[in-house]
Length: 73
Image 1 (cartoon, helix red, strand yellow):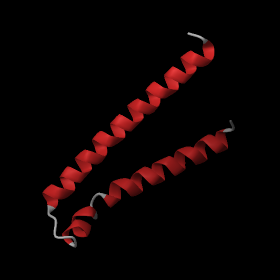
Image 2 (cartoon, helix red, strand yellow):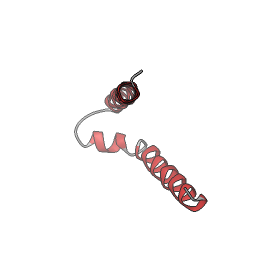
Image 3 (tube, one colour):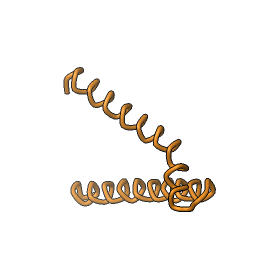
């Protein structure tokens, strides 16, 4: 993979991460429109974090199982 492609993908990843980080500061106003408070925002972020960790671990486990099956390990 060329250096330009790697740099472009890295830049895109950093840009998307920064957008997601910035969005967390706007969530309290969005939730206030639904009648929620900052505790509800924090709880939602906690649930999102746990779900992300579970999804990543499940994906890694499925990938490793497929790799073992493919290589007969």
